[in-house]
Image (cartoon, rainbow, N blue to C red; front, side, top):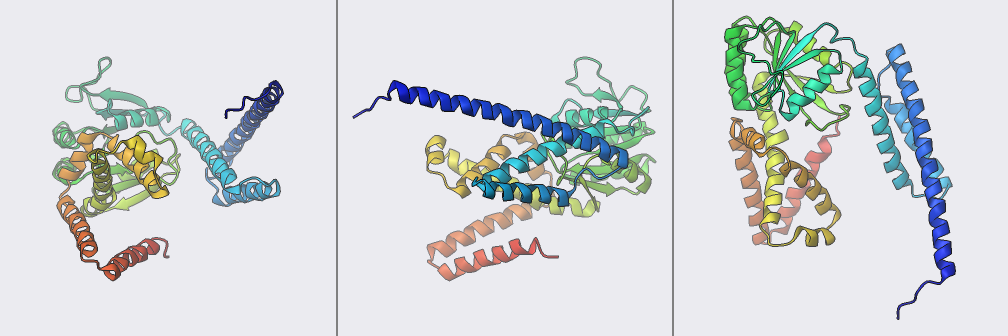
Length: 370
C-alpha cells in the first residue's frame, strides 16, 4: 500500500533540502576562496622560479584531509577523490598561468601546417598563449589562410600537424623550399616520415621530430610525455624543448629507430584491444544500457577506456596501425595470445591459465621496480 507523506514530512524535507542548498553555496564560496590562494601561490612560484608541482605538498594536503575526514566520520575515500580533483584543477590553473606569462614567444612567429586539425588547433593555442604570432596553413582555413608553398617561410618554427601521409609530402615540399626556421613534425608514426625527415636534414634545414603523447583535449601536461627525436641538430632540439618548459610535461629523448617499435605497443596494441572489445559488444546483440546496469568494476573501467578510444578519429587510428612497420608483429602477437588463452580454456588447462595470469602479474609488478 502506498503511503503518502504528511504535510509535516514534506515541510521537514523541504527545510533539510534548503539547508543543503545553503551548505553547497558555502562549499562553492570556500572553493572560490581556495582558488584565490592557489592563484597567489602560482604568482609566488613564478616570482621565485619554483616548480609548478610539489608532490610532497600534495601528499600533505591529501593526508591532512583524510585525517580530518576520519575525525568527522566522513568517507575518507570520497574526500580523497574530491581533493585529488581539486588539486588537479589548481595545477591546471598554475600551469596555464606559467604558460601565459612565458616570454619565449616574444617577437617570434610560428606557422602551423594543418592548423585546423585538432592537434594543430592545440598547438595554435599553446604557442599563442606564449606570445607567438601564429599563422595557419590549411586547406580548410577559410580566412587568413597562409599557403606555405607561396609565402616567404621566415618563421621561427614550422609545425607540421597534418595526417601522417600528408605530412610526408609536406616535409618533402619543405626540403625544396628550405625554410630558415625549425621544422618539426608531430606524427604518431615515424616510419613513413623517416625518409622525408632525413631529406629535410640533408637539405640543410633545421629539423626536429616530436611526438606529444597526449590528445588535443588535454588541459594539464603533468604526467604527460613529449618524445623528442634528434635528427642531428641538438641546438634545434633544445629550442623545441624550450616550448614545453613552462609546462610539467616529461621530456623523453628517443632514437628514430626505436620510436615505432615502442609505439606499436603503447598506441597500436592498446588501441586495437579496446576497439576489439567495443566491436564484440556492438555486435553482441546486447543493449549497452542493459550491460551497464549489470556491470562490474572491471567492465566499467574497460568500457570507459574503450568508449574514449572509439570516439577518436578512425582515419588517424587506421594510419597508426597501417603505417607502422612493427604493427603486424604486434597484431600477430595479440592474435596468438588470444588463441592461446582460448586453447587453454577449451582444454580445461587450469594450471596453464594460472601461469599465464601469474606471468602477466610479474610483468605488471616490474613496472614499479627500480
